[in-house]
Image 1: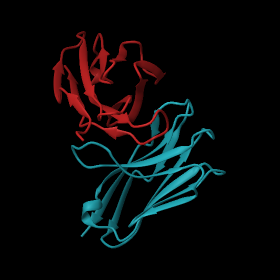
Image 2: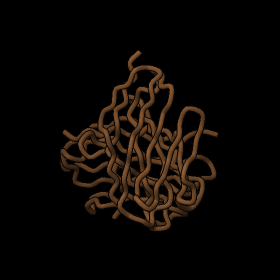
Image 3: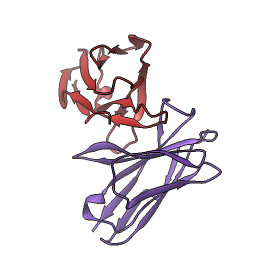
Image 4: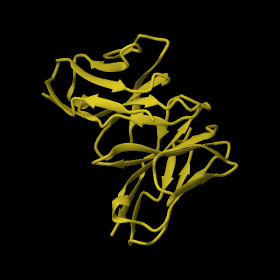
Length: 113
Length: 113
């Protein structure tokens, strides 16, 4: 089975712009979660989707949003980018509906200048 | 929400020695506790996990113990090897019936040959 695939791998954006990141989960996985990884804050939960429904959201501003499609692929969007949004954004998929292992993608490295 | 603390932040051991990393969590409703290893520039990968109905789990040189009463869990690596050098993260599940994890801040383990 192919692993979790994230595109693009690297992205450079300017403050104020918006960005969309994509995640394709492992085939058959319906749960997709997103995390932000920074040296200062570590890995922080953004949101989780299951069967196209957002079930849980972390403590991030409304500029961060996401969605999931019927094929379980997911996108996350960040609007009005700030310098502090520079981070590695990781997507993970899980085989069951709750409290199961998360398989991570390689991540998208976002740099805001 | 859940708060996970992890210690130590850095750990150096001689090859062949044991390494122990400890985590505490705050939400007594959490019931799933995975450990991830992240090598430089790579994705986090699950190395072992434990559920709240089990006190200890072992997989070759790696073991995890869980004390639900005290709300702490630990990772034990025996007979360490240079390839064990990486950053290790503990995590606890959110108690919301979804796949969301709260991570510790990570431990950088260095195994000295």
